[in-house]
Length: 80
Image 1 (tube, one colour):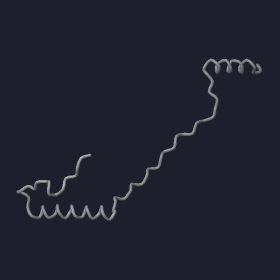
Image 2 (cartoon, one colour):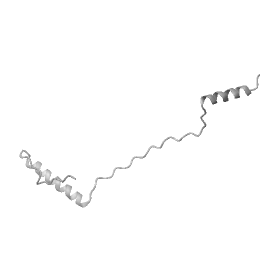
Image 3 (cartoon, rainbow, N blue to C red):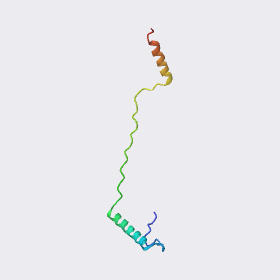
Image 4 (tube, one colour):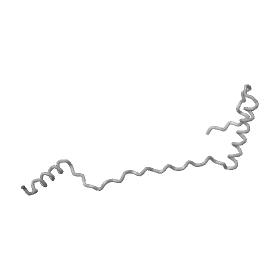
């Protein structure tokens, strides 16, 4: 694993103003305190899963069987 850089290892730019330096040190201190206390980011709520569509329980016949069944039904109808 990579080692964490400490504030002393990071060279500070000379062009930075005193306010920027102070803000960085305050931020680092606040971060260290927050991790020591155990403050964590709020957990994201879980997204609700979208259910799959329910399968229809109906028979599906191939085309030839459907045509044969239709012919058989048509031939059995009484003629007028």
